[in-house]
Amino acid sequence: MNVRLLALALCISIITVPMAAEDSVNVSWSASADVFYSYSLNDPPDHQRAYTTQPARNAEFGLMLGYIGLAVNGPDYRGRVALQEGWFTRANYMGPDSSWRWLQEASAGLRITNGLWLDAGVMFSHIGYESMITRDNLTLSRSFTADYTPYYSTGASLAWSISDAITLTGLVLNGWQQIVDINDDLALGTRLLVKPSSELTLNWSTFVGNEQPRGMPALVRFHNNLWAEWKPSTAWTLVLMGDLCMQETATDTSAQQWYAGVISSHVLSDAFRLTARVEHYNDAKNIFIATPAGTPFQATAASANLDFRPNSAFLIRCEVRTMMAADDVFPSNDGLTSNDTYITLSTSVAFGE
Image 1 (cartoon, rainbow, N blue to C red):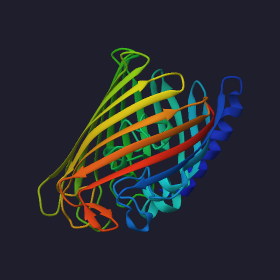
Image 2: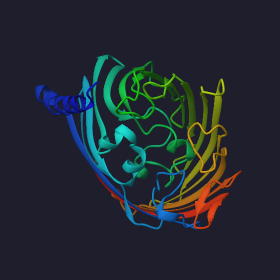
Image 3: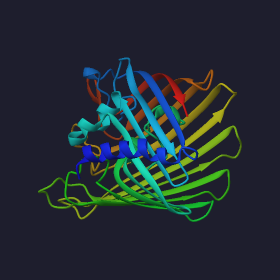
Image 4: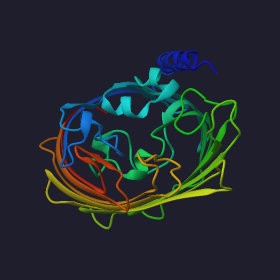
């Protein structure tokens, strides 16, 4: 698939389709810029942060993510095109995808029948509770699982709203966070979203695919992601998150990675919100995280952030996060250490719908 032609075709389709039914289409735009500053007590060399892409740099001001997007929504079609830049894109769009880091989304969707939608293109990932857009998340930094599961994907999805409470989605993808496919195999994904009530949302997402480059023996990855969001009141939000991944390896029949995390968030007033997170990430076989000495990555982290929102456009945030590992895996100005504590400040502005 020529991804440049795909992106161009999607852009043209999103712009031209609404002309046929101007009375029923809703066209909206959105834009945001998020400036970060983060400082680690370890003071790692070369301003490089480890095991996190938001923040991506140490002791340095910079644009974490800026984007501008155009979306159209009609009764029988929908689509979005968005362009982006920032530290986040440089840390996440690697290899062949690096030349596409400016493209946040280019997708178009068609309603096949009531409750059944087919979407295709470059899209936000179906895996995980968190988003690449920081201000849309309860926490300022991303969790371990967010940074080591896809933020975006390329392919097609078929979503069926079985009822007001249940939506089932099946996906065919290029691979694990890939715009440019690295092999000749397609990957499969599913998502089950259940809302038993207005207070509770349950999600189960899966991925299965070969993530080896062309010319290498196929090694299949099977990933499960689960999360539950409970809002007992307008002031409180509680989130439980869990991952379990099984990966074929060249030496072992199967390696495993698992994750567990909890987020608690409380709205203090119209302008202030306080959020805390505790999590543990276990990647003993280094499926996702390669440590400097080749040791397993087994780490626990805790964070707390205070948000100040003076109006709907501006958001000012401050977070303190500490990470503790079983081995010396965190870089510092004095070699490797088993812990890392850092503070992050963020100011963001958003416009549009």
